[in-house]
Length: 282
Image 1: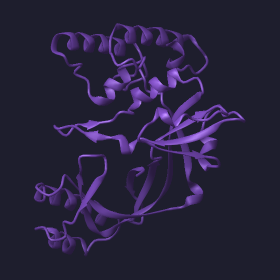
Image 2 (image 1 turned 45 degrees about the vertical axis):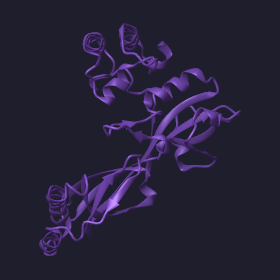
Image 3 (image 1 turned 90 degrees about the horizontal axis):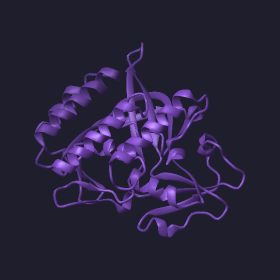
C-alpha cells in the first residue's frame, strides 16, 4: 500500500484544510534500454511503467530511459523480537545502484495536493502482523467506542476532526490488548488537477547523519563515534535512519572510510557552484 501523510490546518470557515502527500509504493528505478534484471529483487513485485504522470518529475531523463517500480514490501518480515527486517532497505538499494551499470538512478516518488478533510464517522484499529501487512481490528464493540461516537456527533469541521484524533488516542489506550494503533476514519477531498509530483533521489540524505544542513564535519565525527561504540559495545548506537545515512558507501560497515568520504564531499560542495551528489565521491 502507498504511504500517506496528512497535514491539516483550520480554514477561516472552520473546515479542515489538508495537504495530502502520498508516497508511491516502492522505489522507482530508471535503467538504460536493456531494462531491469528481476533477479536482483527476489520476492519483490516489479512492473514497468511506460507512461506515467510522475516521469516529468524525474531528473536528467534520457530518451531511452525505462522506468520500473519495485515494491519491496512482500519481502519484509519481523524477527522473534518484533523488529522489522527489510532486505531491500536504503543501504541495500544503494549497493545495487553502485554495482549495476545499467541502473541510471533510483528515486522515491511522492505526490501532494491541497484540499479539505473531515471525520468520516468511525475509527479503525490496526495490528501490525509478523510480516509487513497490517491487519485491521474491529474495535466497534470495545468500551468507550459508542461514547466517543456520541461526543463527536455535535461537532463539525476542523474541531470535530481534532476531537476525533484525541478520541482515537483514548481508544488506543483502552484497547491496547487488541491493537497497537487506532485512527479516526477521514474523508479527504482534493482536486486531482492540482497534484504535484516530487522525486527524491536515493542518495539525497546519505552522509547527513544528524539530518541538519547536509553532510559535514559533525556527521563525520558522529560516524567515528559510532565506529568506536561498535568496537567497544557491539552497537553503533544509531537509530535505523541514522545508521542508513552513516553507511555512506553501503558496504555494511560504519567506519572511518565513510567519515573520510563525507569530509571530501563537504569540502567540494562548499566551493562548487554545481549541485553535487555524494555518490560521485565513492
